[in-house]
Length: 56
Image (cartoon, rainbow, N blue to C red; front, top):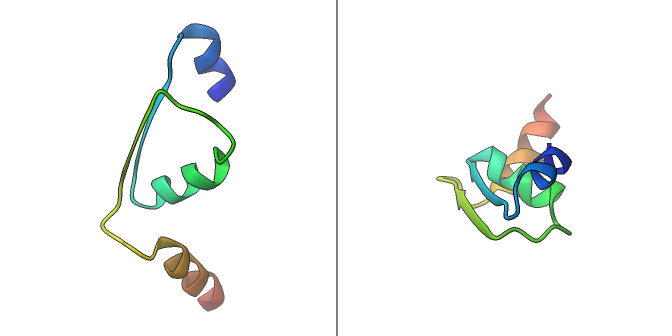
């Protein structure tokens, strides 16, 4: 998706909500965006994901 966006637009911004914000930070750690907005009601997202992974 990122390659597609780069081909079509000169600048790219990222907006992600909740768990998508955490996954976006992991997936795009090396990328540079024009702007980024991460919205998450959970402050310890990594801890939450690790706890959920142990349960299943």
